[in-house]
Image (cartoon, rainbow, N blue to C red; front, top):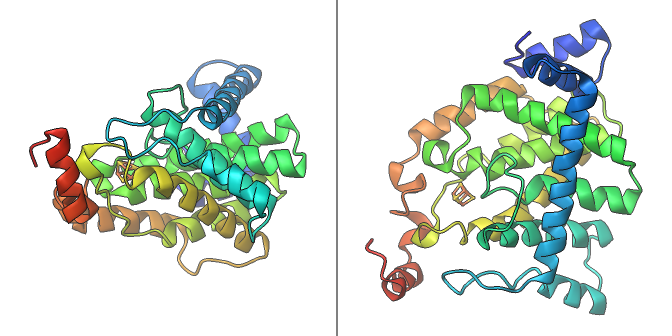
Length: 292
Ligand code: SF4
């Protein structure tokens, strides 16, 4: 049973009267020729690795090759101790954890590519931060991660999840949709609401380009993780309120693919356009001895 569209997924949930995560774990178990418990154990290992990446990222200020990045995450708790963020403690944790994981990636630390290394901070930040603050048990977090997984799988059946293929909409954008789905599931949303959260998140990042400065997964990648983690929460909250995307999720994914095809190659991980060709980026290229 291969589920290749969100429409398909929704029909399965209705026909079998099951949540999305149940369908996801059964699919995975069938693919791996194992049972559901083994799959849940594997997902738990990923969850633990995500928490460790956050912990490690929070305690390091080691800078990157460019010397531009690596010490932003520690600035957040310092400020939040003095004055809380306007959006409260969950926002504080989400932004901090997203930066912590993305900075850990630039140090070549252990992260979970979810769906890619450049976008590795988004799903963990949302799942871990909200779970800590809302006291969501581990089994529910696993349900959330399984939900995120099947969302990534369905999108990747149509679009390759790489900045070089469809820009950052296919990396951080998809990560945001996966996080929105996970959160909606964890907060008790219906399968329909989970899929609405995916549509809402994806629709609002269409066209996001991939223009990493000096070809390094640093600028704009690291901070983008914090922004799109918060974006995921907006999508989940709207979906849980009953707000629906007029364009169905499958059509949004088709649009993401077409938008990627229409995007100039200069803006697809070649570092030949966008932020990568600003005056400041060119100066850094020169300093690092990189030929543009
Ligand atoms: S800007 Fe490009 S390299 Fe950076 S996270 Fe997005 S897709 Fe990946």
